[in-house]
Amino acid sequence: MSESKRRIFSMLDADGDGVISQAEYFARVDRVAAAMRRPAGDPLVVAARAAHAEVWWHMDANRDLRVTFEEYSAWAGHDTFEESCRPALRSLFDIADADADGRLNRDEFTRLRAAMGNAELDIDSAFDALDTDRDGAVDREAYLLGIRDFLTTGVSAMAGVYGSGRPAHEALPAH
Figure (cartoon, rainbow, N blue to C red):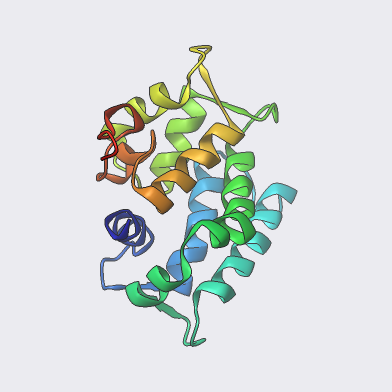
């Protein structure tokens, strides 16, 4: 599980200096909004900023406007995901969901994940794994569960976009 946390932390630490600055964390909302061509005043963008502010203040335990891996690792987990990460990630999904149908097509998914800093070469495999009914779309709940599972277990259809871990279909059998 710590490897999956390390991969997510590395994605959030955009400049690679070993800490997530407040500016780096909030910039992901702006990058997703720009990728989806939504203006700063769009209600979905405003809601995403508010959801990310809530996460930030929980993550930054010592209130120094920087989150170390130790702070992130101690904070991140199943309960944390459900309480604060889910609303923040749902808000980014909603920005990307152009027709507001609760589903992302391949283009929307690709633009969202690329804007969030994921390896573009693995985005297609994550999309294919999450599109379980093969209808050409990933629904919001499957997307959020994929991220939660990667964070909490390291095994998920989303593993490839973080560049580490095993996709769910390649999980090792339990011993």
